[in-house]
Length: 107
Image (tube, rainbow, N blue to C red; front, side):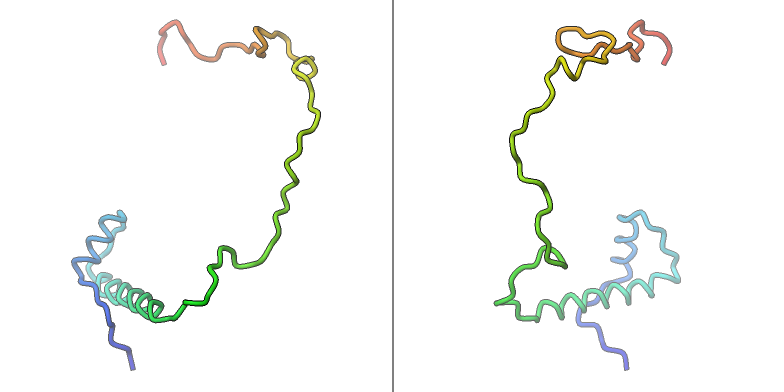
């Protein structure tokens, strides 16, 4: 025996939701989605009845430790060491060929 929905949704609401979601719903599918949306709303209502007073919020489905390394200051290369293979530099930056047409030509 099918359970009667506690909350219901109208066919107009289903059509409106489909339109907002840019989802095409045929007329013969509206009844099906009306029932399915009603079932979803009923499940949500049942979840509201569950007492979660002493339940700790859970952010992940599994426990894990942070695997990131500790943030430490370490010696890195100097600018001169990094730029050793650059063909040309200007004012501390690597100079590269222009890729944007600044002559105002055709795009």
